[in-house]
Image 1 (cartoon, rainbow, N blue to C red):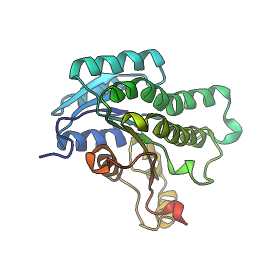
Image 2 (spheres, helix red, strand yellow):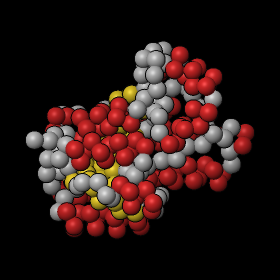
Image 3 (cartoon, helix red, strand yellow):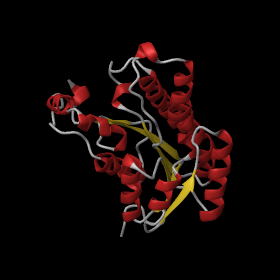
Length: 244
């Protein structure tokens, strides 16, 4: 018996990296999983997995979110879990960030989770149950990164708290995860510099980088009924980096 038996879960950015790790674990634990992504090739690959349905979604589009949420609810009869994971990063220095950079980052990383909650939470509230998990970043909690990425993840932190108070009385829980540096395609550039990689590991109390499974396991707990009295919570998963 799986911990997510008979539940329907939407994972944005579900075709690669942290999102794919969550998709794999949730399907293993009995959920019907909708992997939402904008990458057609990655979606085709993830759709071949058992109990996984790949569906295209641009999370920065309010119109696409509205149609997507309705299609999932109509097709599967319920939406029990939403993981707002889709996001982008940037290596630009603050001197080089312009308004276009800012708006693109905030549209995907900030508006994406907001729109997901906006369109999915009402379906959950209609049945007085549901779990929403937003993927923020440790950069939203410490002074690291004067840039548009940190700003976007700070927005996710604020949105999560506000949504928890807005929808809690309707039976919908909203929590946030704050990953540190996780080994994914988005962070592959780190491996090109052994010096930088060594520095990051040395600076982390647990002496390693995170893996997608580290985030997926935390998301599983928050998605399951085991966390039924938890909402508005923040869980940092960074090997102790931000505790220093």
